Amino acid sequence: MFNRSNIYKLILITVVWLIAGCLVTLHEYLFLTNYPGVLQTSPMVGYEFFKNLSAAAIALGCGGFLLGILELFVFQRMVNRMKFWKAVMYKMAIYSLALLAIITGTSWLFNTVLSGRTLWASEGLHQTYHFITSLSFWHPVTPFLVLALITLFFIQLTERFSMQELLRLISGKYFNPKEEARIFMFLDLNGSTTLAEQLGNARFYELLNDFFFDMAQSIESNLGEVVEYVGDEIVICWKMDDGLNQSRCLKCFFDIEEVIRQRSPVYRNKYGVVPAFKAAVHCGDVIIGEIGKIKKSIKYSGDVLNTTARVEQMCNKIKAKLAATGPLIMQLESMPYSTERVGDLELRGKTETVSVYRIS
Image (cartoon, rainbow, N blue to C red; front, side):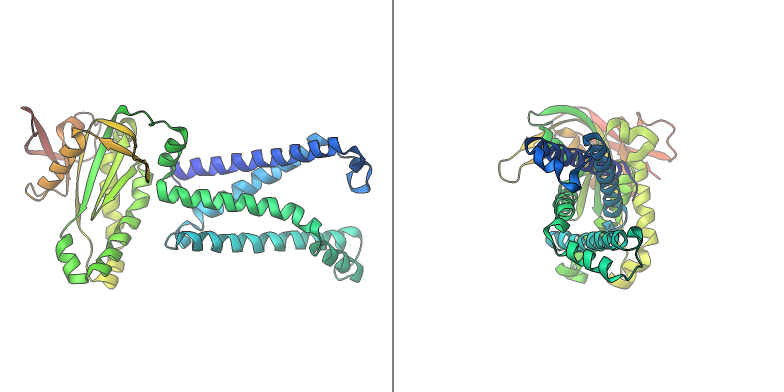
């Protein structure tokens, strides 16, 4: 699926592979400089550093780009439900077989047709066999497989942490806590207790997993970030500009609703029920920072979270599938949804209230 997160991943993978190609060529050049006698051997006569550098950069850059396309836009849904190690091994097996076939085929053509022989010439086949059974064969293969393995591990890691959180942890952006404005959505499955009793805990967990999986694309396409899953509830957040622009923080809910509607036959056939849900959206300042030593993560803290949770709890009372607060509604421009003020929420420990709107 094409979204900002995957585009960033694709660019990063391509750049890393391009740099890797340059570094391999530089290492090769430094080796040849220290052992000049190698340059006098027949395979190395006429060696040109910049020519090889350009070839390696183009080859590895294109290779990284193609691998990124396959990983992010072809294989993503196919292996998303696999265990971490199974997904990595499955894709490594595919890439290894593809690479071996490409290099073997290239060697075969080079030693036969491109050398003025017929396709099945015995001498050409013998030279190809000699190449693929020699150590020379692994010179181009090994670096590629190592780099592919690192790339696959990175992509699987971003599925666990999300691209944004992983980069923030690596860069240490929130090592020291910061106060920033954010928009939060608390989205909760309706009647979860009843569903768990009807389906049993294991089947209910499967439904919940399918439900969260199906909404992922709507969240990412609207530039939202999953903060955490809490039981049958998911917490999503946006940077202010991202969430306010095109009313994405509200549009996300209706996009999820449409996805679940389209997949309702699947849910009925599998579970006998279509999940219904409600959500609340609010904005405000929060403290963002790294917390913990074991399983360190980036957490959000502030009254805005408590307020959003309380508004979400009001949804059944005010008969709203989606509720939003006045402070958020006031900042939305050209909103394509109808709003109706349905009450006020008293803030704990404070004298002021927050107006609550039903969105439809």
